[in-house]
Every structure is written in C-alpha cells, then in structure tokens.
Length: 245
Image 1 (cartoon, rainbow, N blue to C red):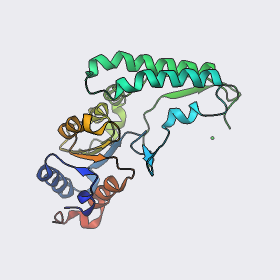
Image 2 (cartoon, rainbow, N blue to C red; image 1 turned 45 degrees about the horizontal axis):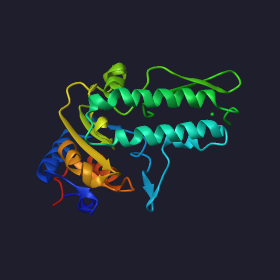
Image 3 (cartoon, rainbow, N blue to C red; image 1 turned 180 degrees about the horizontal axis):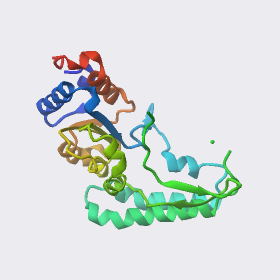
Image 4 (cartoon, one colour; image 1 turned 45 degrees about the vertical axis):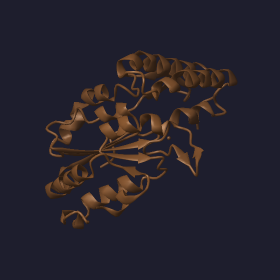
C-alpha cells in the first residue's frame, strides 16, 4: 500500500477495492488519467494548525472593498445556510433550492455593495464568473450559477472540455462534499474512478455517509499529501510497478 494511505487521517471502507482501482489505473498508464477536483476546502485548506481558513467567498467578504452592511448580510446568509449544507438529515433535493437561494443572494449583495475596483496545458476551471465594467468595478455575476449540488450540470454543460480528454477514461476525483461526487458525470466511458473526500466538519455525524460514497476519506487532514502521493504514484515511471505492500 502507498505509505501515505497508512496515515491516521485516512479512512477506507474497502481498502482492497482501493488497491484494485490503483492497480488498474497504473496498468492503463499516465495518458489515461485525468484529475477532477473541487476548489474550496479541497485544493485550499479547510484549516491550518487547527484554525479555520476562509474559502474564496470569505476572502471577498472580509475585503476592505466590501461595505460593512454587505459583510453583515453575507455573515447572516452563512449562518443561515451553511448548517443546512452540511446537515446529513436533509436530502439533496431539499437542500437544492436553498443553496440556489443562498448563492443568488450572496452574489447579488457582493456586486451591489462593492465600494472600489479591485487591484490581472493549463487546468480547465469551471466557476462562477464575475462581470466587471470598463473601470474594473464588479457589476454582477454572470453565466449559470454553480453551487455545491449542481456541479454535475456544470460538467455536462462543458462536454466540449471532456471531448478533448476522451482518451483519459480513468479519473482521480477529489472533493469535500457529497455534491462533489457528481463532478465526473460528464466524462464519457469511465473505466476506473478513485474518489477521495475531505471530511472537515461534523465528522462523526457525516463519517458513515462519506465512507459509503468515497473510496478514501481524509478526516480533518489539512494537507494534500494523500492526493499528491497517489497522483505521483500513478504518473511516475515506477507507477507501472505493482502497488507496494
């Protein structure tokens, strides 16, 4: 087994199945692999040395360019909707309209209350896009709203990107929510997919559902050591050797 998978933060419901997926992806070769990852609290840290790190929207929320009135409104939205987002008692169908409501209100508020303009083979980024005027002032958010539970729709709307990667039918998926599990739904003819999930908050309440959904669950892991080790193992020359035991 890859040494990093022995970390105390790593949980696996079926370690043997994980090993089988890794071996199959190794055998298929580097040219067949693509990585699909969430950004906030996945590529970025949820916490550092035990202290909570701000996600992307909180960087804006805490900016001096945002009015105090807007900051208060955004904080109220967070306190209202975030507990619902991570509550395992709610179904995705129940959460969906509330997540749309949250991000629509947040985007509208951020654009309306901005006081001054902000101070310019690559990854493909699917995101909520800002619309600035000619002076650099944020006027609105544009395009389809992307939130925690519609990343599958975002993927399917960008099937041109997946067409470019049609020969890469093995996926390393990295996320931090159950909604992230659908990010690869636009990929055609998936042969193997290894799903890695960061479990950062309300661990005991959500651990079972994460273990049932993700192949590897990283509990309160503040690093990218495990995903990086897996990717290095799969893409290195030695990656074609059997998995270490």
